[in-house]
Each structure stands twice: as structure tokens, then as C-alpha cells.
Length: 206
Image 1 (tube, rainbow, N blue to C red):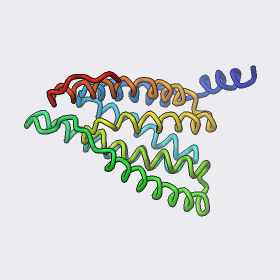
Image 2 (cartoon, helix red, strand yellow):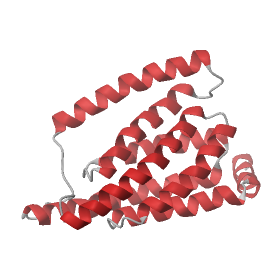
Image 3 (cartoon, rainbow, N blue to C red):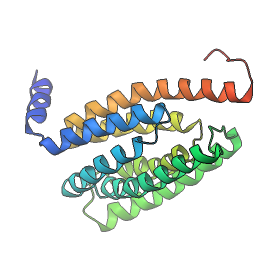
Image 4 (cartoon, rainbow, N blue to C red):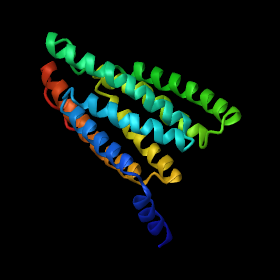
């Protein structure tokens, strides 16, 4: 099968740096699910690698997104560490109305940026790149604030990103995001249980 041969060839062509970024990114996710602040240093290193890789691959928005991730890794480290000291940073749940406003606003911004990138830069897959980037920017902030629903955003973002990386031939990263899509569901369940326990509510069936 030609697609399988191309996929295997893509794996052997990837540099050791991408594999390192994949391992660190997976470590970030698993540590974040456990509310371990060491997830942020892992995120910082992996996103530095991806910033360079995506820029070289003409995914400009993805490169800028990972530069933003580097910044948010520092912010997240500070917020989670300070929250552990004063016990103020706990998992919170935002209303459907608030999330609807976030989704609509982010969608409009993403379409506008996608148009500009498509018309005036050498970016490839500009609209899809912009959508995944803009929603990932917002969702990373939700992670830093420990908003429960961030995991639901990631399910959609990661699934869309898998298609993007398949088209670009970033096969190890494609596998990573397939792993992400599964594990973020576990992340939502775990954070949901912690949040319900802190609120003193019985656990509802998911």
C-alpha cells in the first residue's frame, strides 16, 4: 500500500530533534493531567524545537503558536507554582455562555488571520493552520487557568491538527497528536472528578 510505504518513509526521515519534541510533548500532557507543574519545562523545550521545525516547513502560524507556547510555559509554571503555595489555583468550570462567546470570537479572528496569511504570505493551508493556531492559543490560556473544559477544546484541535500534519508529512507528530486525542479524554475525566470532589458534588456518569 502506497500510503503505508510513504508513512514509514516519513518516520525514517524525521530528525532526532522531532522525536525528542514528541517525547517531551507527551510528557507535558501526562504531567499536566496530574497537575504536576513540571509539565511546563517539558513544554518549553518541546515547543522551542517545534517553533524552528514549523517555520522551516512554511507553517507560519504553527511556528508562531509554538513561540507563544514557550511564553505560556513560563507563565504556566509561575501560575501553577504560586497556586500551590496559596492554594488559590484550583480547577474551575466556566459556563456554556462564556465558552460560546470564546468560540465565536476565536473563530472570527482565525478566519481573518487565515485570509491575510493566504493572500499576503507564503503560508500553506492558511485557514486550517490559522484555526488550529488561534484555538490553541486560547486553550493554552485555559490550561494555565485550570479551566476544566480546556480538554474538550483540545479534542477538536488535536483531531484537526492530525490532518494538517498528515498533509505536511510530519508523521511522528501526527502519531503524537493521535495519542493526544485519546489522552485528553482521560484528562477531562480526571479533572472533572477532582473538580466535583472539591465542589462536594457526587460524581455524575460521563
